Amino acid sequence: MRTWFYGLAAVAAVATAAPADDKPAQDKAAVAVVKKAIEAHGGADVLNKYKAGTMRIKGTASVMGLDLEFTGEVSYAFPDKYKMTMDADLMGQKLKIVNVANGKTVKSTVNGLAAPIPDAAKEEMASNAVEQEVTTLTPLLDADKYTLKSAPDADVNGKPAAVVVVSGKRLKDKEWKLFFDKDKGTLVKMQRKGVAADGSTEVDEESYMMDYKKVDGVLTPGKVEVKHDGKKFLTFEITDVKYKEKADDKEFAIDD
Image 1 (cartoon, helix red, strand yellow):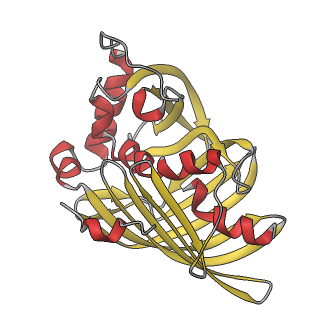
Image 2: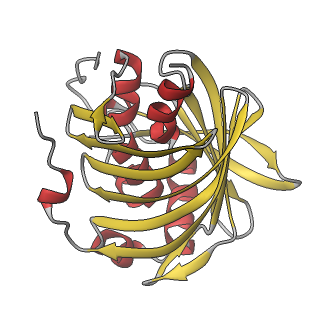
Image 3: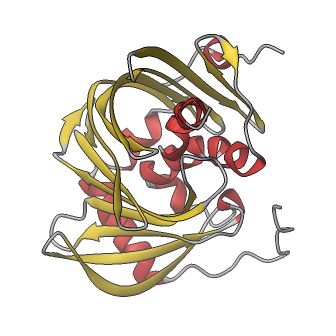
């Protein structure tokens, strides 16, 4: 979600570690929290069924000191494909931004023209598909991809949350914190080190998921709020969600 707006910021502003030989032991308490969350979000059979999806988004982005309204569409396919198309209006100028990640190859265009992408933003764009995998939850139980450990409980919007720290080669050995409602088991917050809309500055990113509803048997957030270093960055609604067993690879093709 973080680099959807890199192309917009550009207009406004005119190493993976080698894997260990042995699998690290998974924290049993953390695994239990994730298993509870899997059941809360629809169950392993349902979650594992879908390897791709699409959704519509609509909201506001705070970029370069401006609050910008946008609409868009997001598509993804596991393990490493992601596409975002966004329409926005910047001081009277209509913008269509398209960001595509296909494996390690990424491309950003603004009104059909290629936009330069800083190296940090390239990695960030490529990680969007990984974020979809993390929030699917069932892949977290694969010790070849992820390592889980417990952290002290936290307060999220006035309610207690169980905290699981996720790392591993899929996250380039960086740590992500997942916060789960203690009673319901739902994922209510995700925290990680991310990249700001300028494509290079590191920020502390917090994403809050809310207004859940069932779609194709999957408990799905209807609204997301994202903060960078404690300040509002994005607020958007999610609609027209469609989960798919497979996607058309042509949708994520990147032309030279």
